[in-house]
Amino acid sequence: MRLTRSFIPTLKETPNEARIASHRLMLRAGLVRQTAAGIYAWLPAGLRVLRNIERIVREEQDAAGAQELLMPTIQAAELWKESGRYEDYGEEMLRIRDRHDRDMLYGPTNEEMITDLFRQSVKSYRELPQILYHIQWKFRDEVRPRFGVMRGREFLMKDAYSFDLDHAGAVQSYRKMMLAYMRTFQRLGLKAIPMEADTGPIGGDLSHEFIILAPTGESQVYYDAAFEEIDYVAGGAGGFNHDSAADLNRFFIEMTTHYAATDEKHDLAKWAAVADPRRREGRGIEVGHIFYFGTKYTKSMNAAVAGPDGKPVFPEMGSYGIGVSRLVGAVIEASHDEAGIIWPDSIAPFKAAILNLKVGDAACDGLCESLYGRLQGNALYDDRSDRAGVKFNDADLMGHPWQIIVGPRGAAAGKVELKRRATGERSELSLDDALAKLAG
Ligand code: 5CA
Image (cartoon, rainbow, N blue to C red; front, side, top):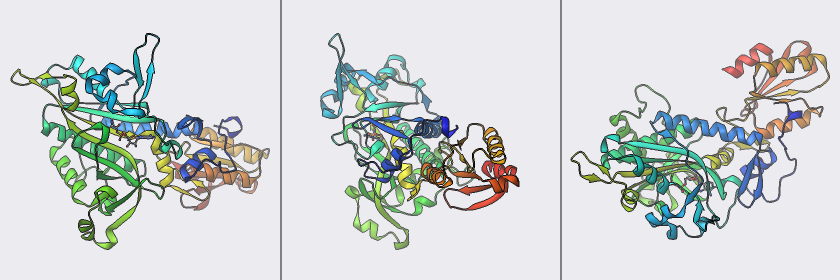
Protein backbone atom coordinates (compact mmCIF):
# COMPACT_ATOMS: atom_id res chain seq x y z
CA MET A 1 0.00 0.00 0.00
CA ARG A 2 1.23 3.51 -0.79
CA LEU A 3 0.96 5.77 2.21
CA THR A 4 -0.24 8.71 0.07
CA ARG A 5 -3.21 6.60 -1.07
CA SER A 6 -3.93 4.85 2.20
CA PHE A 7 -6.42 5.37 5.01
CA ILE A 8 -4.06 5.07 7.96
CA PRO A 9 -4.83 8.19 9.97
CA THR A 10 -1.91 8.40 12.44
CA LEU A 11 -2.06 10.94 15.27
CA LYS A 12 0.81 12.98 16.70
CA GLU A 13 -0.95 13.76 19.95
CA THR A 14 -1.99 11.21 22.50
CA PRO A 15 -5.79 11.12 22.70
CA ASN A 16 -7.09 12.04 26.17
CA GLU A 17 -9.36 9.06 26.65
CA ALA A 18 -6.57 6.51 26.25
CA ARG A 19 -5.07 5.52 29.57
CA ILE A 20 -3.02 2.46 28.63
CA ALA A 21 -0.25 2.00 26.06
CA SER A 22 -2.09 -0.30 23.69
CA HIS A 23 -5.17 1.91 23.52
CA ARG A 24 -3.02 5.01 22.92
CA LEU A 25 -0.94 3.30 20.28
CA MET A 26 -3.90 1.74 18.48
CA LEU A 27 -5.47 5.18 18.11
CA ARG A 28 -2.19 6.92 17.26
CA ALA A 29 -1.15 4.28 14.69
CA GLY A 30 -4.53 4.59 12.97
CA LEU A 31 -5.65 1.00 13.67
CA VAL A 32 -9.08 1.67 15.18
CA ARG A 33 -11.55 4.43 15.97
CA GLN A 34 -14.28 4.33 18.59
CA THR A 35 -17.76 4.75 17.15
CA ALA A 36 -19.74 4.42 20.43
CA ALA A 37 -18.72 3.48 23.99
CA GLY A 38 -16.82 0.19 23.80
CA ILE A 39 -17.52 -0.22 20.07
CA TYR A 40 -14.74 0.16 17.52
CA ALA A 41 -14.32 0.41 13.78
CA TRP A 42 -11.28 -1.42 12.45
CA LEU A 43 -9.39 0.72 9.96
CA PRO A 44 -7.34 -0.91 7.18
CA ALA A 45 -4.07 -1.44 9.08
CA GLY A 46 -5.91 -2.61 12.20
CA LEU A 47 -8.03 -5.00 10.18
CA ARG A 48 -4.90 -6.56 8.67
CA VAL A 49 -3.64 -7.35 12.18
CA LEU A 50 -7.02 -8.71 13.26
CA ARG A 51 -7.13 -10.95 10.17
CA ASN A 52 -3.59 -12.19 10.80
CA ILE A 53 -4.49 -13.17 14.35
CA GLU A 54 -7.65 -14.86 13.09
CA ARG A 55 -5.58 -16.81 10.57
CA ILE A 56 -3.25 -18.22 13.22
CA VAL A 57 -6.15 -19.01 15.55
CA ARG A 58 -7.95 -20.77 12.68
CA GLU A 59 -4.89 -22.77 11.59
CA GLU A 60 -4.40 -24.09 15.11
CA GLN A 61 -8.08 -24.91 15.60
CA ASP A 62 -8.10 -26.80 12.30
CA ALA A 63 -4.89 -28.62 13.21
CA ALA A 64 -6.53 -29.80 16.45
CA GLY A 65 -9.40 -31.26 14.44
CA ALA A 66 -11.99 -28.56 15.17
CA GLN A 67 -14.36 -27.66 12.32
CA GLU A 68 -15.23 -24.10 11.46
CA LEU A 69 -18.80 -22.92 10.98
CA LEU A 70 -20.40 -19.51 11.35
CA MET A 71 -23.32 -18.82 13.63
CA PRO A 72 -25.26 -15.56 13.55
CA THR A 73 -24.76 -12.69 15.99
CA ILE A 74 -28.50 -12.32 16.62
CA GLN A 75 -30.16 -15.12 18.58
CA ALA A 76 -33.71 -16.01 19.57
CA ALA A 77 -34.40 -15.64 23.31
CA GLU A 78 -36.25 -19.01 23.38
CA LEU A 79 -33.00 -20.97 23.34
CA TRP A 80 -31.73 -19.09 26.35
CA LYS A 81 -35.02 -19.60 28.16
CA GLU A 82 -34.54 -23.34 27.64
CA SER A 83 -31.12 -23.38 29.27
CA GLY A 84 -32.27 -21.02 32.00
CA ARG A 85 -29.64 -18.41 31.20
CA TYR A 86 -31.98 -15.77 29.75
CA GLU A 87 -32.75 -14.40 33.20
CA ASP A 88 -29.37 -15.32 34.77
CA TYR A 89 -27.26 -13.38 32.28
CA GLY A 90 -28.57 -10.07 33.53
CA GLU A 91 -27.77 -6.61 32.23
CA GLU A 92 -24.73 -7.69 30.23
CA MET A 93 -27.04 -9.14 27.61
CA LEU A 94 -28.26 -6.78 24.92
CA ARG A 95 -31.92 -7.63 24.47
CA ILE A 96 -33.72 -6.71 21.27
CA ARG A 97 -37.35 -7.02 20.16
CA ASP A 98 -38.21 -7.57 16.51
CA ARG A 99 -41.26 -6.15 14.65
CA HIS A 100 -43.33 -9.21 15.60
CA ASP A 101 -42.58 -8.56 19.27
CA ARG A 102 -40.30 -11.57 19.51
CA ASP A 103 -37.50 -11.42 22.08
CA MET A 104 -34.10 -11.57 20.44
CA LEU A 105 -30.61 -10.84 21.70
CA TYR A 106 -27.15 -10.03 20.40
CA GLY A 107 -25.12 -13.12 21.35
CA PRO A 108 -22.64 -12.77 24.23
CA THR A 109 -21.60 -16.43 23.64
CA ASN A 110 -23.06 -19.44 21.81
CA GLU A 111 -23.46 -22.52 24.05
CA GLU A 112 -27.23 -22.62 23.53
CA MET A 113 -27.14 -22.11 19.78
CA ILE A 114 -24.48 -24.76 19.17
CA THR A 115 -26.34 -27.22 21.40
CA ASP A 116 -29.47 -26.56 19.36
CA LEU A 117 -27.62 -27.12 16.06
CA PHE A 118 -26.09 -30.27 17.48
CA ARG A 119 -29.38 -31.80 18.70
CA GLN A 120 -31.06 -31.16 15.34
CA SER A 121 -28.55 -33.34 13.51
CA VAL A 122 -26.53 -35.62 15.74
CA LYS A 123 -28.48 -38.67 16.83
CA SER A 124 -25.90 -41.37 17.55
CA TYR A 125 -22.78 -41.79 19.67
CA ARG A 126 -21.05 -42.90 16.43
CA GLU A 127 -20.99 -39.26 15.32
CA LEU A 128 -18.98 -38.22 18.38
CA PRO A 129 -16.64 -36.60 19.21
CA GLN A 130 -17.21 -33.25 17.54
CA ILE A 131 -15.43 -29.94 18.07
CA LEU A 132 -17.05 -27.00 16.29
CA TYR A 133 -15.91 -23.38 16.31
CA HIS A 134 -16.55 -20.01 14.82
CA ILE A 135 -14.94 -16.58 14.85
CA GLN A 136 -17.74 -14.14 15.37
CA TRP A 137 -18.58 -10.78 16.95
CA LYS A 138 -20.08 -10.82 20.41
CA PHE A 139 -21.81 -8.15 22.44
CA ARG A 140 -21.65 -7.80 26.21
CA ASP A 141 -23.00 -4.64 27.72
CA GLU A 142 -20.07 -4.24 30.10
CA VAL A 143 -20.66 -1.76 32.95
CA ARG A 144 -17.30 -0.15 32.33
CA PRO A 145 -15.96 -0.70 28.83
CA ARG A 146 -12.37 0.46 28.95
CA PHE A 147 -8.83 0.15 27.70
CA GLY A 148 -9.94 0.28 24.07
CA VAL A 149 -10.45 -3.12 22.45
CA MET A 150 -9.28 -4.91 25.61
CA ARG A 151 -12.63 -4.57 27.31
CA GLY A 152 -15.05 -3.58 24.61
CA ARG A 153 -18.78 -4.10 24.40
CA GLU A 154 -18.61 -5.49 20.87
CA PHE A 155 -15.61 -7.77 20.41
CA LEU A 156 -14.40 -10.60 18.20
CA MET A 157 -14.13 -14.03 19.80
CA LYS A 158 -13.13 -17.46 18.63
CA ASP A 159 -15.42 -19.82 20.46
CA ALA A 160 -15.24 -23.58 20.13
CA TYR A 161 -17.56 -26.22 21.57
CA SER A 162 -16.81 -29.90 22.09
CA PHE A 163 -19.26 -32.82 22.35
CA ASP A 164 -18.08 -36.18 23.67
CA LEU A 165 -19.75 -39.41 24.67
CA ASP A 166 -18.27 -39.53 28.16
CA HIS A 167 -16.13 -37.76 30.70
CA ALA A 168 -12.87 -39.33 29.49
CA GLY A 169 -13.56 -38.13 25.95
CA ALA A 170 -14.45 -34.65 27.16
CA VAL A 171 -11.20 -34.41 29.10
CA GLN A 172 -9.33 -35.41 25.95
CA SER A 173 -11.04 -32.63 23.96
CA TYR A 174 -10.26 -30.15 26.74
CA ARG A 175 -6.58 -31.06 26.64
CA LYS A 176 -6.51 -30.89 22.85
CA MET A 177 -7.88 -27.37 22.94
CA MET A 178 -5.46 -26.39 25.68
CA LEU A 179 -2.58 -27.52 23.48
CA ALA A 180 -4.04 -25.65 20.49
CA TYR A 181 -4.15 -22.53 22.70
CA MET A 182 -0.55 -22.77 23.84
CA ARG A 183 0.54 -23.21 20.22
CA THR A 184 -1.60 -20.29 19.10
CA PHE A 185 -0.25 -17.91 21.73
CA GLN A 186 3.34 -18.93 21.07
CA ARG A 187 2.87 -18.23 17.37
CA LEU A 188 1.49 -14.81 18.28
CA GLY A 189 4.73 -14.07 20.12
CA LEU A 190 3.06 -14.26 23.53
CA LYS A 191 3.96 -16.13 26.70
CA ALA A 192 0.49 -17.12 27.86
CA ILE A 193 0.20 -19.15 31.05
CA PRO A 194 -2.77 -21.43 31.81
CA MET A 195 -4.20 -20.81 35.27
CA GLU A 196 -7.04 -22.55 37.04
CA ALA A 197 -10.11 -20.37 37.03
CA ASP A 198 -13.67 -19.95 38.20
CA THR A 199 -16.33 -20.74 35.64
CA GLY A 200 -18.74 -17.83 36.22
CA PRO A 201 -21.86 -17.62 34.03
CA ILE A 202 -20.62 -20.31 31.61
CA GLY A 203 -20.82 -22.98 34.35
CA GLY A 204 -18.96 -26.23 34.98
CA ASP A 205 -16.22 -27.45 37.30
CA LEU A 206 -12.99 -27.38 35.31
CA SER A 207 -11.67 -24.23 33.77
CA HIS A 208 -8.42 -22.51 32.83
CA GLU A 209 -7.75 -18.97 31.79
CA PHE A 210 -4.74 -18.09 29.67
CA ILE A 211 -2.94 -15.06 30.97
CA ILE A 212 -0.10 -12.91 29.67
CA LEU A 213 1.93 -10.53 31.80
CA ALA A 214 1.51 -6.80 31.18
CA PRO A 215 1.74 -3.92 33.63
CA THR A 216 -1.82 -2.83 32.86
CA GLY A 217 -3.40 -6.26 33.44
CA GLU A 218 -6.56 -6.50 35.50
CA SER A 219 -5.42 -9.13 38.00
CA GLN A 220 -2.26 -10.04 39.89
CA VAL A 221 -0.75 -13.37 38.77
CA TYR A 222 2.08 -15.68 39.85
CA TYR A 223 3.78 -18.48 37.92
CA ASP A 224 6.83 -20.68 37.55
CA ALA A 225 9.19 -19.66 34.68
CA ALA A 226 9.11 -23.32 33.57
CA PHE A 227 6.12 -22.42 31.38
CA GLU A 228 8.24 -19.99 29.37
CA GLU A 229 10.79 -22.65 28.53
CA ILE A 230 8.41 -25.10 26.88
CA ASP A 231 8.24 -25.11 23.08
CA TYR A 232 4.65 -25.97 22.17
CA VAL A 233 5.06 -25.55 18.42
CA ALA A 234 8.13 -27.77 17.93
CA GLY A 235 7.35 -31.20 16.52
CA GLY A 236 9.32 -34.42 16.92
CA ALA A 237 10.40 -36.07 20.16
CA GLY A 238 9.53 -33.88 23.13
CA GLY A 239 6.91 -32.08 21.06
CA PHE A 240 3.20 -32.59 21.60
CA ASN A 241 0.92 -34.22 19.06
CA HIS A 242 -2.83 -33.51 19.34
CA ASP A 243 -3.73 -37.00 18.19
CA SER A 244 -1.68 -38.90 20.73
CA ALA A 245 -3.41 -39.57 24.04
CA ALA A 246 0.00 -40.11 25.67
CA ASP A 247 1.25 -36.72 24.41
CA LEU A 248 -1.89 -34.96 25.60
CA ASN A 249 -1.50 -36.57 28.98
CA ARG A 250 2.16 -35.56 29.26
CA PHE A 251 1.23 -32.06 28.10
CA PHE A 252 -1.57 -31.69 30.65
CA ILE A 253 0.71 -32.83 33.46
CA GLU A 254 3.23 -30.15 32.39
CA MET A 255 0.49 -27.53 32.41
CA THR A 256 -0.84 -28.44 35.83
CA THR A 257 2.23 -29.31 37.91
CA HIS A 258 4.20 -26.05 37.60
CA TYR A 259 2.85 -23.34 39.84
CA ALA A 260 0.51 -20.79 38.24
CA ALA A 261 -2.27 -18.86 39.95
CA THR A 262 -4.24 -15.67 39.88
CA ASP A 263 -4.71 -13.60 43.01
CA GLU A 264 -7.92 -15.36 44.04
CA LYS A 265 -6.29 -18.81 43.93
CA HIS A 266 -2.80 -17.83 45.11
CA ASP A 267 -1.35 -20.30 47.62
CA LEU A 268 1.52 -18.82 49.65
CA ALA A 269 2.88 -22.17 50.79
CA LYS A 270 3.09 -23.54 47.25
CA TRP A 271 4.57 -20.27 45.99
CA ALA A 272 7.28 -20.45 48.64
CA ALA A 273 8.28 -23.83 47.20
CA VAL A 274 9.08 -22.27 43.79
CA ALA A 275 12.79 -21.43 43.56
CA ASP A 276 13.33 -17.68 43.73
CA PRO A 277 14.85 -17.13 40.26
CA ARG A 278 11.95 -19.05 38.72
CA ARG A 279 9.24 -16.86 40.18
CA ARG A 280 7.37 -14.61 37.80
CA GLU A 281 4.74 -12.27 39.09
CA GLY A 282 2.91 -9.23 37.81
CA ARG A 283 -0.33 -8.00 36.36
CA GLY A 284 -2.04 -10.32 33.90
CA ILE A 285 -4.39 -9.98 30.93
CA GLU A 286 -6.76 -12.87 30.14
CA VAL A 287 -6.53 -13.70 26.43
CA GLY A 288 -8.38 -17.01 26.49
CA HIS A 289 -10.60 -19.10 28.71
CA ILE A 290 -11.66 -22.75 28.47
CA PHE A 291 -14.41 -24.59 30.30
CA TYR A 292 -15.54 -28.15 30.86
CA PHE A 293 -19.16 -28.27 32.02
CA GLY A 294 -20.33 -31.81 31.28
CA THR A 295 -24.02 -32.16 30.53
CA LYS A 296 -25.19 -28.73 31.73
CA TYR A 297 -26.55 -27.71 28.31
CA THR A 298 -27.19 -31.09 26.71
CA LYS A 299 -29.46 -31.99 29.65
CA SER A 300 -31.30 -28.70 30.01
CA MET A 301 -31.83 -28.54 26.24
CA ASN A 302 -32.53 -32.24 25.85
CA ALA A 303 -29.76 -32.95 23.34
CA ALA A 304 -29.41 -36.71 23.84
CA VAL A 305 -27.91 -39.18 21.35
CA ALA A 306 -28.37 -42.94 21.18
CA GLY A 307 -25.55 -44.61 23.12
CA PRO A 308 -23.81 -47.91 22.23
CA ASP A 309 -26.58 -49.88 24.01
CA GLY A 310 -29.35 -47.89 22.32
CA LYS A 311 -30.19 -45.94 25.45
CA PRO A 312 -30.09 -42.13 25.30
CA VAL A 313 -26.89 -40.45 26.51
CA PHE A 314 -26.34 -36.75 27.15
CA PRO A 315 -23.01 -35.78 25.57
CA GLU A 316 -20.40 -34.03 27.70
CA MET A 317 -19.46 -30.55 26.56
CA GLY A 318 -16.75 -27.97 26.89
CA SER A 319 -16.38 -24.47 25.47
CA TYR A 320 -13.23 -22.66 24.54
CA GLY A 321 -12.83 -18.92 23.95
CA ILE A 322 -10.06 -16.72 22.60
CA GLY A 323 -10.43 -12.94 22.63
CA VAL A 324 -9.34 -12.27 19.05
CA SER A 325 -9.85 -8.49 19.12
CA ARG A 326 -8.53 -8.25 22.70
CA LEU A 327 -5.35 -9.96 21.47
CA VAL A 328 -4.52 -6.98 19.25
CA GLY A 329 -4.31 -4.82 22.37
CA ALA A 330 -2.68 -7.55 24.43
CA VAL A 331 0.12 -8.08 21.89
CA ILE A 332 0.81 -4.34 21.91
CA GLU A 333 0.86 -4.27 25.72
CA ALA A 334 3.47 -7.02 25.60
CA SER A 335 5.46 -5.55 22.72
CA HIS A 336 6.03 -1.80 22.47
CA ASP A 337 8.48 0.95 23.49
CA GLU A 338 8.27 4.75 23.88
CA ALA A 339 8.36 5.20 20.11
CA GLY A 340 5.48 2.87 19.31
CA ILE A 341 4.35 -0.65 18.51
CA ILE A 342 6.78 -3.52 17.84
CA TRP A 343 4.76 -6.08 15.87
CA PRO A 344 5.77 -9.75 15.96
CA ASP A 345 6.46 -10.83 12.37
CA SER A 346 3.55 -13.27 12.43
CA ILE A 347 0.82 -10.65 12.73
CA ALA A 348 2.27 -7.32 11.56
CA PRO A 349 -0.05 -5.43 9.18
CA PHE A 350 2.90 -5.03 6.82
CA LYS A 351 6.14 -6.90 6.96
CA ALA A 352 8.12 -3.80 6.06
CA ALA A 353 7.86 -0.06 5.51
CA ILE A 354 9.77 1.40 2.59
CA LEU A 355 10.90 4.90 3.55
CA ASN A 356 11.71 7.05 0.53
CA LEU A 357 13.80 9.86 2.02
CA LYS A 358 13.82 11.92 -1.17
CA VAL A 359 10.68 11.60 -3.23
CA GLY A 360 11.42 13.01 -6.70
CA ASP A 361 15.02 11.77 -6.75
CA ALA A 362 15.18 9.36 -9.68
CA ALA A 363 17.43 6.80 -7.96
CA CYS A 364 15.35 6.82 -4.74
CA ASP A 365 12.04 6.58 -6.59
CA GLY A 366 13.33 3.81 -8.86
CA LEU A 367 14.69 1.70 -6.01
CA CYS A 368 11.55 2.17 -3.90
CA GLU A 369 9.24 1.23 -6.76
CA SER A 370 11.27 -1.86 -7.45
CA LEU A 371 11.19 -2.90 -3.76
CA TYR A 372 7.50 -2.15 -3.53
CA GLY A 373 6.76 -4.32 -6.56
CA ARG A 374 8.85 -7.20 -5.30
CA LEU A 375 7.32 -7.16 -1.81
CA GLN A 376 3.91 -7.75 -3.37
CA GLY A 377 1.49 -6.16 -0.95
CA ASN A 378 3.58 -6.95 2.13
CA ALA A 379 5.04 -3.47 2.32
CA LEU A 380 3.75 -0.04 3.18
CA TYR A 381 5.50 2.45 0.90
CA ASP A 382 6.00 5.85 2.55
CA ASP A 383 5.94 7.90 -0.63
CA ARG A 384 4.96 11.17 1.08
CA SER A 385 7.08 14.27 0.49
CA ASP A 386 7.56 14.74 4.24
CA ARG A 387 10.83 15.17 6.15
CA ALA A 388 12.80 12.05 6.98
CA GLY A 389 12.13 12.57 10.71
CA VAL A 390 8.38 12.38 10.18
CA LYS A 391 8.76 9.11 8.27
CA PHE A 392 11.06 7.56 10.88
CA ASN A 393 8.66 8.48 13.67
CA ASP A 394 5.60 7.12 11.87
CA ALA A 395 7.35 3.88 10.93
CA ASP A 396 8.44 3.37 14.56
CA LEU A 397 4.92 4.23 15.76
CA MET A 398 3.26 1.76 13.35
CA GLY A 399 5.73 -0.91 14.37
CA HIS A 400 6.56 -2.68 11.08
CA PRO A 401 9.10 -5.43 11.85
CA TRP A 402 11.44 -4.03 9.17
CA GLN A 403 12.14 -0.59 7.77
CA ILE A 404 13.85 -0.27 4.42
CA ILE A 405 15.33 3.20 4.30
CA VAL A 406 16.16 4.58 0.89
CA GLY A 407 18.23 7.79 0.78
CA PRO A 408 19.84 9.51 -2.23
CA ARG A 409 23.44 8.63 -1.37
CA GLY A 410 22.79 4.92 -0.88
CA ALA A 411 20.35 4.73 -3.78
CA ALA A 412 22.99 6.11 -6.19
CA ALA A 413 25.14 3.12 -5.18
CA GLY A 414 22.22 0.68 -5.30
CA LYS A 415 22.15 0.35 -1.49
CA VAL A 416 19.41 0.60 1.10
CA GLU A 417 19.50 0.66 4.88
CA LEU A 418 17.60 -2.12 6.63
CA LYS A 419 16.41 -1.51 10.19
CA ARG A 420 14.96 -4.13 12.50
CA ARG A 421 12.29 -2.44 14.63
CA ALA A 422 12.63 -4.76 17.63
CA THR A 423 16.38 -4.32 18.13
CA GLY A 424 17.14 -1.07 16.31
CA GLU A 425 19.89 -2.95 14.44
CA ARG A 426 20.75 -1.37 11.08
CA SER A 427 22.75 -2.58 8.10
CA GLU A 428 23.53 -1.22 4.65
CA LEU A 429 22.72 -3.76 1.97
CA SER A 430 22.06 -4.20 -1.71
CA LEU A 431 18.41 -4.45 -2.66
CA ASP A 432 18.68 -8.21 -3.22
CA ASP A 433 20.41 -8.83 0.10
CA ALA A 434 17.82 -6.72 1.92
CA LEU A 435 14.98 -8.71 0.38
CA ALA A 436 16.73 -11.99 1.18
CA LYS A 437 17.12 -10.94 4.82
CA LEU A 438 13.42 -10.05 4.99
CA ALA A 439 12.44 -13.39 3.54
CA GLY A 440 14.69 -15.28 5.98
N1 5CA B 1 -18.32 -19.30 26.01
C1 5CA B 1 -17.06 -19.13 26.66
C2 5CA B 1 -15.94 -19.75 25.91
S1 5CA B 1 -16.28 -19.96 24.26
C3 5CA B 1 -16.81 -17.67 26.92
O1 5CA B 1 -17.57 -16.83 26.54
N2 5CA B 1 -15.70 -17.38 27.60
S2 5CA B 1 -15.23 -15.96 28.13
O2 5CA B 1 -16.32 -15.21 28.65
O3 5CA B 1 -14.15 -16.17 29.03
O4 5CA B 1 -14.69 -15.16 26.91
C4 5CA B 1 -13.63 -15.68 26.12
C5 5CA B 1 -12.57 -14.64 25.84
O5 5CA B 1 -13.15 -13.50 25.20
C6 5CA B 1 -11.91 -14.07 27.09
O6 5CA B 1 -10.84 -14.87 27.52
C7 5CA B 1 -11.41 -12.72 26.60
O7 5CA B 1 -10.15 -12.86 25.98
C8 5CA B 1 -12.44 -12.33 25.55
N3 5CA B 1 -13.36 -11.32 26.08
C9 5CA B 1 -14.34 -11.49 27.01
N4 5CA B 1 -14.97 -10.33 27.26
C10 5CA B 1 -14.39 -9.39 26.48
C11 5CA B 1 -14.60 -7.99 26.26
N5 5CA B 1 -15.54 -7.33 26.92
N6 5CA B 1 -13.82 -7.34 25.36
C12 5CA B 1 -12.86 -8.02 24.69
N7 5CA B 1 -12.63 -9.34 24.84
C13 5CA B 1 -13.36 -10.02 25.72
